[in-house]
Image (tube, rainbow, N blue to C red; front, side, top):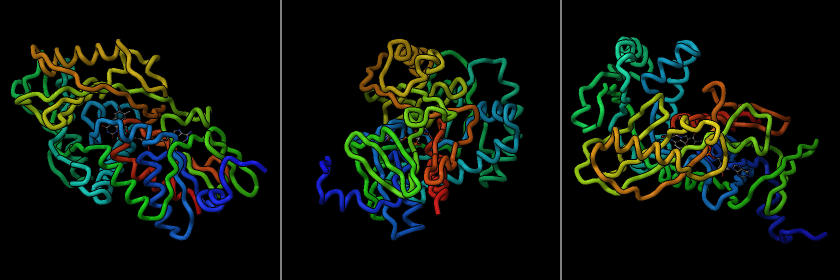
Length: 374
Ligand SMILES: Cc1cc2nc3c(=O)[nH]c(=O)nc-3n(C[C@H](O)[C@H](O)[C@H](O)COP(=O)(O)OP(=O)(O)OC[C@H]3O[C@@H](n4cnc5c(N)ncnc54)[C@H](O)[C@@H]3O)c2cc1C
């Protein structure tokens, strides 16, 4: 019988696979690590469609964040205090685990703090009233007092227009690709095989195994974990998840840049940070919600215009700056902020829908995805 792979390949790379993980993002790699540490003798293969990981994990903004004040207020109003505090605890715990696993230096973790810009004065009083409420509850969870404070930095940072700034002193930032390179090293050290350039197009579960049809060759495994986040619908169209494209730009170096840290604006739809003395700015997808509900990479004139406008009106008023590089990434969102981690067949599990906090929760979601299997 003719096969695309050789006899040798079939009986080594592709033989006797216990678990296939689809997707080599932060979730897929952490799932591989957790599964292999629980079952060291089992064979784990991660299949990734891109020659690099081609999702959000190497394209994100690198905010090691666990919640900005307006987001927390709006979430408490929508989902209730218990759910929000429970999620916050998971994010904090996730960040702690990530730092422990990767090492702060390896992923260039810097705790410059996080800041939220509020330009609408009608919101100021409500936000200021909520600060002590959250500080009390967050101190009990993370052991740091007075996490949020209203700081008088608008002028110092040189921003345009007028507004207030709420600081989160425990927020940090990382280099996402350095984090992922370290994670890939750890996974390989455990003996996991990563097959790049292998896109899974179809899954079929039988009594004996699962058959995966890929663009390159077909695979068989005992179990499969799907960790494809924003791209899940092309494999499983009924998943309660929508892709959300985010466009990002980075400037040329700016002499004497007046701030360091991670900044949130407009309920997190805009975000920016320093990368050395450059500015990374992303978001604005609420300006074209329908168009940006896509899992296709790319940039648009409208969103780039919105980002440039924000850069010149708020971040660097009256200063000419060169944009060095633009790109896009795709995340997975849904009706709640709780990820989907469940079995969808006897042999198939799903660990997706991380929203905009995958750095904080990706480690845990991967571990919980691996724990679906015995
Ligand atoms: C621009 C941007 C900025 C962000 N900023 C932040 C931030 O600052 N802080 C934060 O915490 N989070 C941020 N996020 C969100 C965060 O990056 C994600 O939540 C996280 O990376 C999701 O990880 P994942 O492993 O679930 O998915 P991904 O990293 O998307 O990985 C999924 C992988 O599956 C692969 N794949 C998909 N379909 C198939 C298939 N059929 N066959 C084989 N392989 C397949 C993809 O190529 C991809 O590599 C941002 C996201 C974006 C897009």
